[in-house]
Each structure stands twice: as C-alpha cells, then as structure tokens.
Image (cartoon, rainbow, N blue to C red; front, side):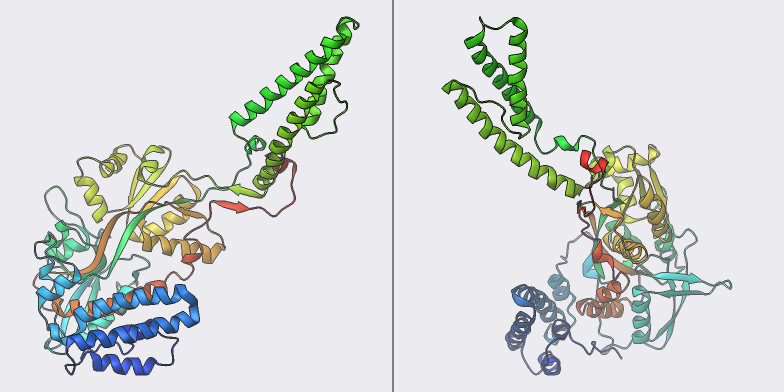
Amino acid sequence: MWKFPSQCSLCVTNQVTNKKHIYEYIERLLFSHAFPITIQFFVYIFILLSCAQSKLRTRGIYGGISTALHSFRMLYHSILYLSPSLGTDTTKLTTGLGWYPNHPFGHTNVTLKDPSQHSVGHETFLRVAVEEWEPHVKVREASDGTITISGPMANLLNALADTLNFSYTLVRPPDGAWGAPDELGNWNGMIGMVRRNEADLALGPFGMTEERTKAAEFSYPIMIDYYKILVKRAHAQLNPWGFLNPLQPLVWLGVWLTFCVACITLTLSRLALEWERLPITSNIMVALRCSWDQLAILLQQTLQSIPDTLSAQAMIGLWLLTVMVIMRSYSSALTSLLAVRHIPVKINNLRDLIDEKEYGLIFETSTALTAYMKDSKKGIYLELEETKAQGRSQFLKAFELLQAARTLVKHEDYALLVEITTIKKILSDDFSSTGSCDYYIAKEHFFPLIFCIIGRHGLHHMPFINFIIQSMVEHDLYSNWLYEEFTNATACLKAPISITVKEPYGIVGLWG
C-alpha cells in the first residue's frame, strides 16, 4: 500500500533543526480530515516561518529568504495536491498545476488516483522500454540478452513496481532512439514500441510535445529542462601586440600627435632665438635634441634641459602633466593584463553557432528538438535544420553522446546541443577524472521541455503512476537522485572566461 514518504516536504527543507519529529507529527495531523483547509493553511504558514527562522540563524539572511521561498512553493503544492478536502477532482488538480482545460497538450487527461484508496488489482506483468541516457538511466545488457538498469529512472521504476504490485521485463528499441515520426507518420524508437503495443511503459524520460501526446499517454511531469550549447573551452593565448591593449587606438593617436606638436613647437621657439648665429647643421642638431627631450619625457626619464622662455616652460609643464597621467594609467593596466588573461569565447547563442561555419553540430537523434527542427518553416530552428544539408550536423544515439563529448567536443570544433542535465553529467565526469574545466556552456538556453515517462493509451496503471510521481516530485526525490549522479558538476558550471596567472614573466609574456 502506498504511503507518503516518511520525511515530509517540510522537514526536507529543515533537516538541521531539532524540531524535525514535531513538524512531521504536525504535518501528518495537518493533512488529516480533522482540520478544514483554512486552519491547515495558517498552521502550515506558522511552521514554514519557523523553518525559515531556523535557517536564518544558521545560514544568514540569504539562507532564511531562500528557505522561505522554497517553503512557500511547497506550501502551494501541498495545499493544492495533498489536502483530502480536494479529493480526487481532476479539474482542481489540473487547474492547480497550471494546466488548462483547452491546453493543446490535453492535460485534463492526467488523472491521479491514490493507490491506498483504489485497488490496483492483482500482480500484473508489464513490458518496459528503456534506452541508456546518463544521468537518468544506465543500461547494461548481458551476453544472454538480460537487461539491467540503474540510476534515477531505475529507482523510480522500482518504486512504482513495489507500490503498484507489478513485475516487469525490460526491452530496448532496435534503433536506440526515443521516437519521432517519419514522412508517413510511423514512429520509431521507444514511442513507436509503445504505440505498436510492443511495450506498456517507456522510461525515457520523454520531452512532451503535442505530437507525442497523440502517440502515447504522458505521466505527471518529472522535471523541466532546457537545451544549451556545449563547446570546448579555449585556452588563454598570448597576444604579440598585447602591450598596445591598455590604451585605445584613438588615445595612442592623440599621444603621438601631441608628442609631434610639442617637438615642433619647442624646436621652432628655440631656433627663433639662435637662427642667425647657428649653421644649418647645428639647427638640425637642435631639432633632434628637442625631439629627444620630449621622447625622454614620454618614457618618464629625466629632463635634460629646461627652455629659457616662459611660454616654452609652460608648455613643457603641461606636457609633463599629461604624460604622467597617461603613462601611470598605461603601466598599471599593462601589469593587470600581464597577470590576468582572457579566454576567447566564440559561441554564446544559436546565432553564433550558425555563423561560425567551422563548427560542427551534434544532436541526439529522433528527439523533440530534431522533430521540431524538421517541421520548422522559418526562423533559427530552420537554419539549424539546414546545417544538415551543409554537412555540419551529426545525429547520435543517446548513449553515444557522452563519448562524443569526451572526444569530438573536447578536442575539436564541435558543439553539442543537449539538455542541461546531460551537460552537468559531462562536466562532473570530466572534472572528476581531470580536475580541470575543459568545456564552456553557452549563455543562451532554448527549447524548454517538460519530461515524463509514457505509457500506452488505456493502460490501467497510469492514474496511480501519476499519483506516485506527483508525490515523489513534490518531495524532491527525483532531483536528489539526479544530484547523486553529478556530484562535481557545480565546479565547472560557471567556469571563468579570465584567469589569474601566478608565474614569473617570460620573454613572450612580457611582450604581450
């Protein structure tokens, strides 16, 4: 018989407090039929504020605010979904979720039934389609054809089987794909297996689209994810002309023009006094000497001679002040540039990727994204589809993506377009093995998807599966299982585009 997890959503956010058991008892009592929903609401508000106050003492203002926001989100879900006063009214449940009766995905069909109040029946046998997609599920196939799985989706499947009293056998799609229709409307992959009644359930998880909902029945949402672009992280390169970077070209031009004007003006003012007494060769030497003095000033050297006239002295003083300000700024900026090196970034969005013709693109085959690209008539997704005709695109199976990231993406000019969850797995594995961050994640995220498991239309277990998945998601169980798969991902999620160099200056380094 299904029961809610013993550690309530409230206590998940308040594990550090010694009031844990009291809160569990209050929450169990709170959602019983003993109290109307109004009393439930205000009592729960009091408990959540107590949780936030506890976090405020241990983690400061940020911890208290973040805990309060998270707790109020859990309150919203709990009042809408867990309170018995709502019963099993699908309309209230779907409205509370944000689904609307006329939504194109038809989510009023997502019914929820509590297995503790409705009999599922005697033990049944289901065929479950699976394919490897780390970090969600790992698939191992023995020489005798026996298939075993592990990971978050395996945990979810085992919880469903134990609660709903069914056994299962695992099957893999021959093409290793999730599922997309061809020109004739025939589906491949796991969706095709479910549609042809070759499987009762398919784990996936599957991104939800309107077209897919017509081919199979989608469960309660497990998670929401976005696509991002993953490319190799460039290395900081020395620029031979880096010593010019502290000043803009217009500033450099102004400095040298001022230098020339000062040289000419001071030379003419001195020659005007001694022109008739000096031969022509001496006049040339005077001009060179004046120019040399101004160059010494520019290079912050000692002034060799002081002009006799007051106007020339005033001009020299103004020139000295200007040079001092400019060269002090230049020297400090140059020191910073020598210590901090910037890593060049070429790809930050889909437009950059399409315009950089030397980059190849890697997609997972037969996904919601590739199907949408194929049906696009204009816009950026049509341009992505056209890269296939240009020979820039590769379409790989899900279990091939991690290997492609370790080889093609990491060492060559290839971009991998996958979900953020997959990117976290790649980053975590790479950092665990190398201790460095060798990938760069583009800033733009695109093509958001709701991910679910799917079943064949009319499957008796789906309402009960929806109820269990809903409870697991609200208690954040699936997210916790996922985090266990990429423990080191946060080390490289926001890799810097500039690095501080702590090493002696070499000849090349001093140059630029």
